[in-house]
Length: 417
Ligand SMILES: *Cc1c(COP(=O)(O)O)cnc(C)c1O
Image (cartoon, rainbow, N blue to C red; front, top):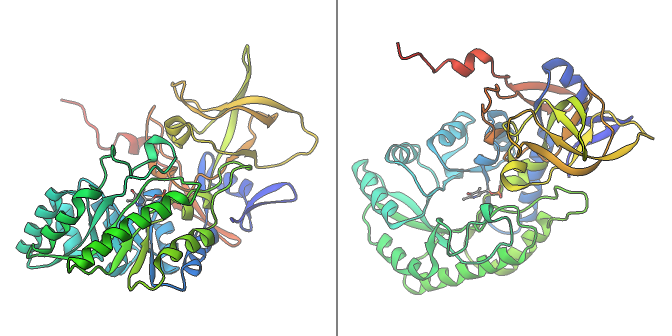
């Protein structure tokens, strides 16, 4: 559920018409609803309220400081994957005991910075990382809290680029090797084994793969207990999908919680979850203006001022985003069209062969479900400045990241004089 809705045929974010924001900041821009972000966190918190749990929002989905600030105030923790993300969560004042650190390639400096901060646990993805972590923790006179990321080898039935928990993926430790690696970690002087982690993929629209993964890691947790290694945290990662299309359904966090908690009853363990998309996805839209409507030989093209550099999910994953006019007019003709950007790539599109109202030049269009993996994946390709991000709170809005300038595009460059 989100707070984007039509009032008198005008699309609003909470109590602000998107046309007002467009007038103030120009197009394109991302617009986020603070109330939606916070509501999504509270839905998770309530769904899991009967067990010990921690919601660690996956920062990579949308790392704007205002977004993180809204979430931390709601009681969320964070899942980070780099020292840059660490600095962001520090900036919004997140307590260290609410931060977990994931990722296959943690650098030495990143590990040092994270140990100095003192986070809840490192989700370790290889034996090399365990050895490195033990060594650096020793040099710093600390004990590093670790979980091992186990690859449960379940098929999440999602797009191959966002599937991470199968044997062929680069992520995690094979289930069969995990026990011996845990024993080795338990023997390392500067490590403290505290948890187990897995993350099987993203945009999952069925619960079965989550339950399978949880069963597999719980079985391993039992083996560890029998071997004298007691864990405090089970981290099931993120991955809960959201509906991108009207007809599409995704499990409600209540059902997700019900299915997971059924496996956890009576266990003395804290469940950690790392949702990203489920928190931020439907809390944001990308607003763009139509530059041209071009009648091609076979179909019509609606050419927008936003491009794949601003929102690359369609180009990268053939992802579907619903597009709609910011000002609705009834009785308008509809026809099949492609919505495309100005970039010099055929993959630069937002919608293909879509039945859409006949948009006019200059008209505003909202691309929905753009709050996660939208701005964070944007680039300057084609020397296009990155677009601003706007946050709405009730009847007010604020620019929480300014539009980049052409001068900024070149500020780190110089001629070889
Ligand atoms: C990307 C990622 C997440 C978040 O995934 P969503 O699909 O956005 O919920 C959580 N944990 C890890 C380790 C990730 O890589």
